[in-house]
Image (cartoon, rainbow, N blue to C red):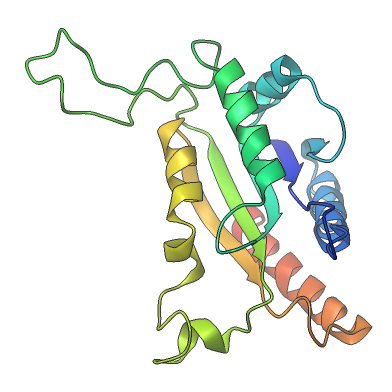
Length: 199
């Protein structure tokens, strides 16, 4: 297996991106231990778009680690995606939006022009919100789950041909974080990876 891990933890204002850097380390170590080849990118460091395109094309599995800012991706991760996907247009990531003027109905098949079919992606996220904000009726997200909130992040990966693997969501990662909580989160996350990627 070839795994490409993207650390989308952003250094901005009060956020140092440290937790997503830590999760990237956990993930890299896990996949190396099971014999996978691993490449990583840290969006805070300089990168060459053409080299990032090659990583997408190379990988069997692409894993995004990202905090959630204002219920979306942080701007540096979104910028990375904009730049890299543009560089990958007709260059390995996607051919077109999937429609054809030569078709009997050129309005159909939007979103089917991705070139990464057969590969998978996984989205892991970290939130300030507690799990109860999603799971209790009348609380902020009113029973809408994390994947529903981040539909855009999932659709951009579907657009380039990737298939979703169940992700993992870390909650309440600003208030009340302790070393004990981090260890519990690590155990739960690694168990999640084991359940999907090992027999």
